[in-house]
Structures are given as C-alpha cells and as structure tokens.
Amino acid sequence: MPYDPSAADTEHNDALEREIRVLRNLEAARIQFLTLVSHELRTPLTSILTYAEALEDERLGPLRHEQQAALASVTRAARQTLEMVDEILRYSKSGGQSAELRPESFDIGTMVEQLETSHQSLLARKGLEFRRQIDEDVPRVYADRAKVSHVLGNLISNAIEFTPEGGRIEVSAEADEEGGWMRVEVADTGIGIPPEDQERIFEEFVSLDRGVDRRLGGSGLGLSIARRLIEMHGGQLGLESSPGEGSLFHFTLPTERNHSALAASGGRNRSRGGAER
View 1 (tube, one colour):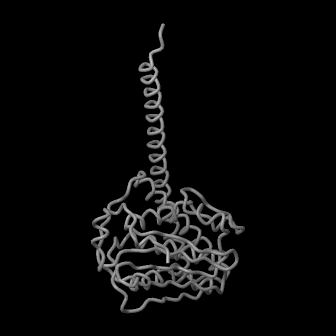
View 2: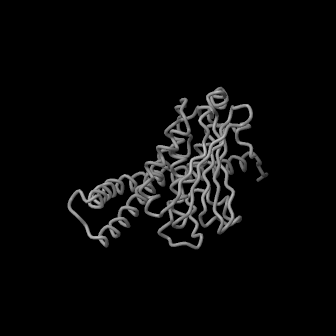
View 3: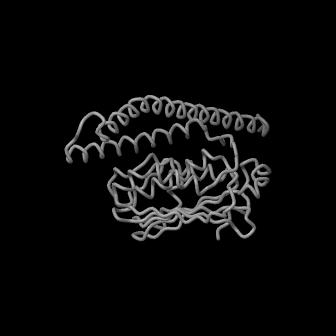
C-alpha cells in the first residue's frame, strides 16, 4: 500500500488536538481546585485573624506581656496566610487571562501614605524606619487604583518581612522628564536576593528559601501577579538587589498626562515607560 502523506498529517493533527484537549482539561481542573481550596481556607482564617486581633488589642480583657507576644505571632501568621490565600484566589480567577483595567487619576503620594498607615503595626513591631520620598508636585498617576495598591502593598509587605529589626524601608516616586511616566521604587535594607534568583522570584509558584526561616515564605504568586498587573498598564516591574545589602523593586506607570498610552495599548503592550533608567 503506497504511503499517504495526507493521512499521516491527519493522524498527527488528531494527536496534537487530543493533547491540547488534555492540557486544557488539566488546567481547568487545576484552577477549579485552587479556587475551591482558597475559598474553603479563607473563612476560617478570617475568623482566626479577627479574634486574634481582638485579643491582642485587649478588647476582651488585659493580657500579660508573654501572652501579647504569643498573640502577635498568631496574628502575623494568620495575616500572612490570608494574604497567600488571596493571592491564589486572584491567580485562579484570572485563569491566565488579563483582568479588566479600570483606570482613574489619583495621587501616588496619598496611596503610599495610606499603605504606611495600614502597615504601621508591623513596622513598629520590628522597629523599622519608613521613609517617603515623593515631591508634592509629581503628576497624578492614571491607572487602576486597586491594582496599583495591591502591587505597592505587596512590595511593602515583602520589604517588611525580609528586613531585619531596626532596618529601613524607603518608597519614592519620580516622573520622567516629559512627565508622562512615573517610576515608583520600594527599597529596603533587608537580606537581599542572589543574582541567580532575581528573575526566578517573578515566576509562578516559586518561593525562595534565601537562607531564612520558612515562616517568611509565601505562595510564590505575589510577585508574579504584581508584574502581570504592571505590564497590563504598559509598564514594567524590575529588581536590583545585592545579598546582605537589601533590595530595590521598581515599576513604571502612566501619568494622567500620558493616559492615552494606556488606552492605546489596551493594557497589553509594553511602552517606553517600561524602559530602565
């Protein structure tokens, strides 16, 4: 029987289609599992955190110093775990697709001030100095406020977690010469990240030991989600770090002077705002 190349091609294509269907089914099952587990974990974690904070604030009666210290550990662990669950939920809801942007004009300095306030108890417990270096005349950012707050909050939380007691965290923001793009930086005096790991930390489900207690670990999704959200705005999120000297995370966003770039890109394309200085 003569060889029929068309039949071979058809068989090959059918095999590829079967493999694609299997992969799609596996991905759908994985996302469904992550969503289910995350929802089931979130309710009891929220309850634990609520009661732990009530006890810690002595709303249910006075506590000894030892009890306060123990409750602080419980509260910190519950809050960190809840943040990890929320990261997994955001990841599973996205399903690998870009979420919708709802851009608006807002002041980045005000957002940093609000995030400093929300992290004040954690900063105080470790005796960390928090500096804001943002001029009053910087242009307003034109971006999705909730998504930018998530990114900036994630970077500040990481800086707090990985900076030893008595260290320093500094958040700054500066526009480029034309005023069309804002560069935001979060620097710390923490443990730093080795060069070979500086790109890996942005991969999904990658959590580095970095030579520290595993209690500082995370879901491995926070920075992956943060980079995706910044790139949706046409910007870029990067890192400069030296082990033992600290880390500097930076990202760019369009300002209200340049919001047409975000509309033109549809939250998908890189623009000159992603360039490194």
